[in-house]
Length: 149
Image (cartoon, rainbow, N blue to C red; front, top):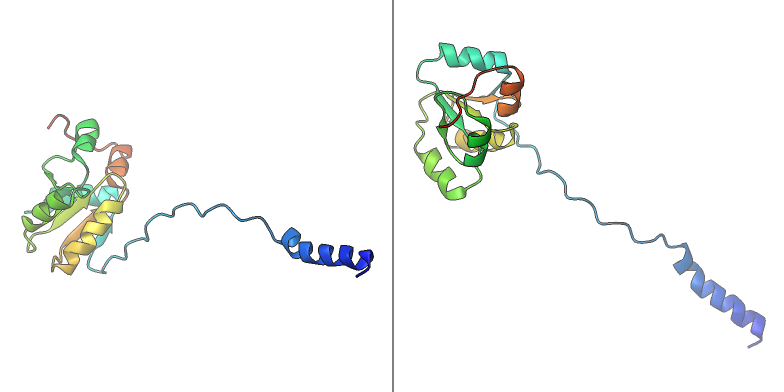
C-alpha cells in the first residue's frame, strides 16, 4: 500500500476520536422531588398561621426540626417536638398524634413539614396546616419564639 493511502487511513481512523466531545462532568445532585400535597393540606403564610394559633382550640403545633435547631433558634410556643430526620423518633412522634385534631406543622424552611404532612394525610389526618417558609419565615416576620426549652 503506498504511503499517501496509509496517511489518509490513519487520519480517517483518528478523526472520529478527535471530533468526539470530551466527557462531561457528572451532573450535580439535585434536590429531592417536591412533595405533592393533598388538597386537604393548607399552606399558610405567617399571618394566617398566627391567626390559626389564636383562634383554633385544640390545635397541635408540631416542630419537625432537629433538637440543635430548637436550641439555636427557639420554637413556636406550645409546640411539640417530632424529629423528622430520625426515623425512630419520627415514627414514635407521629404515632402519638391524634388524627382527629387540627395540626400546624413547621420545620426550618418547609421541606420536612411537606413530607410529614403527606405521610399524615395518607394516615387519615384531615386538618393539616403547614407554615409556609417554616420558622425562618416566622422569625423574618417578627413573630415571637420560646428559647431555652
